[in-house]
Amino acid sequence: MNGVLRFLRSPRLALGVIGFLAVWTGVGAWAPWMQPQGPAAPAWAVATGLSHPFTSLPFLAGIALLFAATLACTWGKRARVVAIRRGEMPGSAVRLLPRKADLDAFLSSEGFRGNGVIRTRFAFALWGGWVFHVGLLVLIAAALVQFSLHDSGTFDLSVSERASLAAHGTVFGRERGPLAREALPDVEVALARFDPFLHQHGYSQDRLSELDVFVPGQPVRTETMDRAAGIRAGDIEIFQAIPTGLSLTIDVQGLGLRAVKLQPESARRASAEVTTPSGTRVRFIVDAQNEIDRPGGEGRMLVWIEGPDGRSLVAPGAPFPFGTGTARMTAVSRWGRFTYTHTPGFALVVGGLVVVLLGSLLLSFPAGVVRVENGGGNRSAVLFVTRGGSAIAADWERVGSPTSRE
Image 1 (cartoon, rainbow, N blue to C red):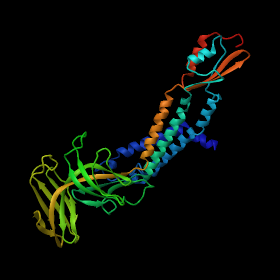
Image 2 (image 1 turned 180 degrees about the horizontal axis):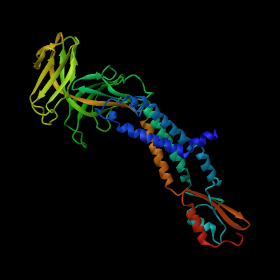
Image 3 (image 1 turned 60 degrees about the vertical axis):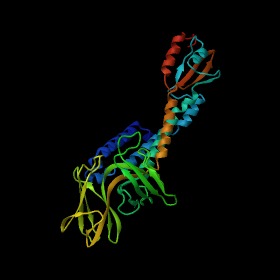
Image 4 (image 1 turned 90 degrees about the vertical axis):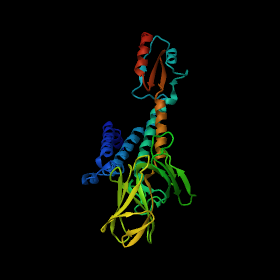
């Protein structure tokens, strides 16, 4: 057991683990396949786990090893602090040799209080290192929980569209930890209002969305999206993303309303390919008079459908061939992109930060304990301070000459 503790307490192990996590995080964050619209991850990245760097087993194993090393360093600290508080000094303690000077007055001038054998200075701050390490343990455990159980994904919504996140095809780009639930969130959302050019007060011009949120067992809520806090829906949070574009709402014969989200081809053109109920691939194209992302509006728009039989104009409300059946275009609107996250370790992260800050505050106090010793009429002391012990010893050397019995 002692050998294991010595291995885990090794500075080389701690530096090695921290270095591995730093390199892994840097590579994972800046890898081309992790960037928006980036290429697919290569085979070697998939094999090593770098295709999903922050939910991969090597990354989680590194965090677990860092937790074990920190726990080994923390183990026994509480007992050592209690022992020092009783006057059982560690090997780093400083001895104040007998001098022809008033030891009590000197210790008092250095901030030590009391008249007995054991005297202290900021005794409460002796716990600073232990509290700091406990905070680190909470933070590392929070990271382990967060990355193991984290779940996130992306979905697009058109104005007036209602979608279930659990439905097939709604969520894409999903990232989840190895211990996260497999099922998608049982939440439905509808985009009641969306303006890509308005903005929340205090933020630069951006998106402004209003969502209807349907959570089983809860009343329906209509909420305006907060750019920083998002929207809480059950145990997930929903946030606004940046991408947006034009959307066509079509009424397909026998199937009802469908939203077709178009992607930009140029500043004034957007398009999307869809499959008809009969399996035919067709392409919708919108040509706008003005730039599509211009705040002043797109101006006049022409909507086309392009299929095996050529291209034809789609008029609002008029039926048009759609595979072996027909459909009608009922509206041209906007779609917006959203993300959802499930972050079970966030509360632990906040708690760990609070404990780390408390430990850092305690470490700012020059805490210390001194044990006064009387021997043959000569008084000496053994001193332990968190910092500045050699300076105190040097000051004691200067205040008086050695006694004849030294």
